[in-house]
Amino acid sequence: MKILLQFPEGLKQYALEYAKKLEKEGNEVFISASPTFGACDLALDEARSIGADKLIHFGHAEFKHVDFNVEYVEYRIDASLDALEKSIGELEQYKRIGLVTTVQHIHQLGKIKEFYEKHGKEVLIGKPYGFAKYNGQILGCDVGSAATINNDVECFVYFGGGLFHPLGAVYATTKPFLAIDPFAGKWLWLDTYREKRKEEEKRVLVRASDAKRFGILVSTKIGQYNMELAKLLKSRIEKEGLEAAILVANTFDFDSLNNMMEIDAFVNTACPRIATDDYERLRKPLLSPDLLMELLKSKEEAKRSSQSQS
Amino acid sequence: MKILLQFPEGLKQYALEYAKKLEKEGNEVFISASPTFGACDLALDEARSIGADKLIHFGHAEFKHVDFNVEYVEYRIDASLDALEKSIGELEQYKRIGLVTTVQHIHQLGKIKEFYEKHGKEVLIGKPYGFAKYNGQILGCDVGSAATINNDVECFVYFGGGLFHPLGAVYATTKPFLAIDPFAGKWLWLDTYREKRKEEEKRVLVRASDAKRFGILVSTKIGQYNMELAKLLKSRIEKEGLEAAILVANTFDFDSLNNMMEIDAFVNTACPRIATDDYERLRKPLLSPDLLMELLKSKEEAKRSSQSQS
Image 1 (cartoon, one colour):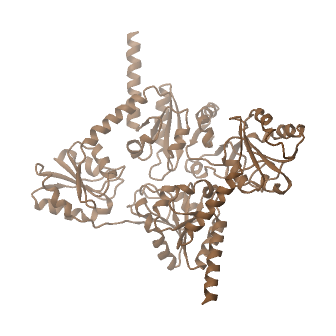
Image 2 (cartoon, helix red, strand yellow):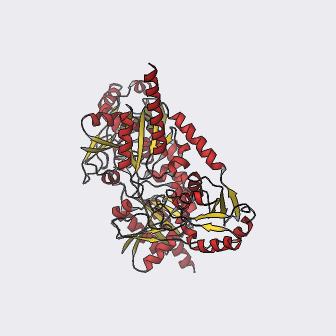
Image 3 (cartoon, helix red, strand yellow):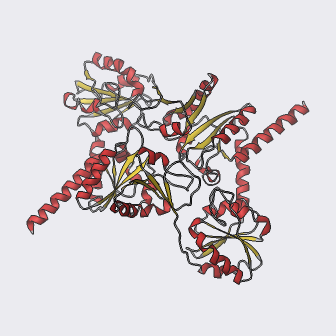
């Protein structure tokens, strides 16, 4: 069988070993070398280009059913739970806790819940909106497991490495948010990030306020492709007498976007995290669809009020 | 008609204006935002993903016939010929000149030839190997217009901007090589680059000498795809008792390659210029197919001589 292997960045170091194992079983094996950001980002173009019979995608749960033979190999990590003990002091004043994690630790969620219950806490585990597969799991584009229980909890606890996953949940909630990193054995309250994000959004709105020409990003990644939304935004921008073009790429290259010097502002319909994590790599402001609508509404209001004054 | 526009980096600034023109003619128009390095690099995956009827590719002549509706719009620049006058002094000791340029200035080649002939020179214009379309034209991967007349000329003159194009020709020739930049109104002898390149190749060979695991790069870009060569190199590496895997991507991302920490050395079958221009962005050595063969041969010789000694 002709197989293409695809690993996320942190697991690419194991690709060759895995390829050799499958070769010994009689397969012809190739490795995708493209950046891989999630199960939204299947290397289907590459698999088709080399005529592969199967794509094996590591480290993420299925995101969206596709018309290709894809095997998902989830990657589970049994992280030490020692850091939980030390977090009890931090959580002293909270009784009802919302618990979230990534797919790597989803099998540990039961034990973590038990631990906090033993310490007198009530633990809630929310449901994702639909892109994430498991209760309590969060993704860059699906923080439903946190957002849907925001009103029912007094605080959130994220268990897992890095800040990419918890920050999305922080932006979508309003309760105190503790991130516990079992690898570093440390924890961090992330609440200050909410204020920072709001400030950044305000700055982006101001920077984009005079934009005349908009570039709307559409990714061809199977789980990020949203041409319908892009067309809707384009016609909404044009209704305002402004110009817009739809810009298409698989992974967006910030140098190439910066080379489009006619564009005054970009609008993101691809992975929502491009607008929160990568906006500083663009010379021009990058708006989420929500921020664009806010911008257009305030432009309309300004127009109406200037007409009523004249 | 549903059209995808693709511009090389230097022309991306004109994309929106062109899109608006085609929209006014009743087309539905999208712009590729991916980096574009040549006509080898057609945005076919993107065109197919959005269901485009046609791809309009700007700035490059046709490279390879493909099974898709592609219109090539070459981009001609009438650059000032003033710098030629000033180059006469530089070329005083040479009678037979080989003249090369890029597709942007190919229509000016006749006038440049005339100019030098008026100044008593004999001007030769060579034929490309096959990827470039015009006599005298050079590409990153086709410097035949220079290499095939190396023995017939006393020196080379390149007319055009930048160093990307002439450097490939410099590496493939042995005669004095003058680059005339009509935009900067300057000229530069490029011969010292040959020595530098040879030194770099030696360093890469030394760094790769103990490599046990090789990653062979195959680009899915229609004009760069060379799976046959990659498979040949893989079996050649394995014959030596070493390991190899074929790594597939459209545009190679150097961070992702650096994340493949098991790989000791990379071998490039994609655009030949990755190995000469971008090798410093990789933590591990990057070999051209030729350099790999040199490495394997010297390994074999070392083995044989150690066997005959024992």
